Length: 435
Image: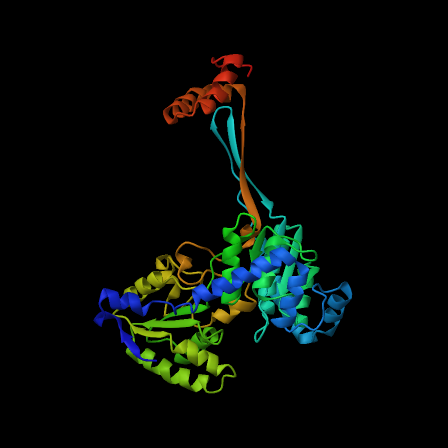
């Protein structure tokens, strides 16, 4: 990885330096996924079984895990792994249980009361990636807030073969609807329902480009399902100063680079010495990584940026809007208020991003690809819907009736005005102490 001198770049070159890796074969992926969705909608379980055999290499026809299979997996799991899942569950639950909705009740004028209220989303679907990296942590990050929010029906899908750890984590979160399905066909099944898979109202969870495309397509369809957030390949940006530990910085960069070849990692520093030391540390650590080939591909699309000052590092980070932002400077708390755009922020040399991925308590389901400028980290509120309640007394209607009538008239909406006028004609326009 070469070091880029930010001050020597034009604005266009700076923008190019912060571009994410292009998503390959967008049109082709969309065509394939649309065909899968249409097939699942038309043929239901029959199509799911075909895709499960062909794409997931699932040898049997049963799409859903039985209660006996869930119990057996929970008994098989290694004790130390079970203990780790239990501890992570407790920490995640503690943080997410504290995210209580803020309800307000306001009397905007005498006799007119406005309120906010929340209700759990009744049916949700959780997608947990499998394959080369079965993400038990994602089962917790999705299952815990769904459980705390009180969602009545939770379905979880993950590609065959499901690891015992994912099954145990789902069971820990009170989930019994567990399906041996991955890829776009799993998303289609959750969005539209089949004979075996119940239709859900909202789908959560990360996935590859086919899963991401499927989520996008079903969310665009009124008959489909809502989704948690826009998603793309994993990414991290590290701000580090001269005194940062290069070994720590390199380890944090590689922890994201090993996710996949389309992942991107960026290091921004006002210290050329730190950047050079990090290059050496990257080479040393990469040499012994089992997933080094994947990490190498990600590093080829990544950046080491020499900035003229710490303030410029902050500006670069806010422009990039990373999924994960790690701050390894002498006083990280001093710049927190200036870090406006990031999915999740990790402060100090000892707060590695891996802690947030697994067990510190924060959620690792985060906006990527620059969406951190507008989207938020997943939380308990994402599993609830917020609505408003209004209640007016007779005097309340009298107080604002004329205002509503005038505004409705200005908009040319006579039926809106008449809804007020008819009521006032029956109760009278004058305030009454008894009303």
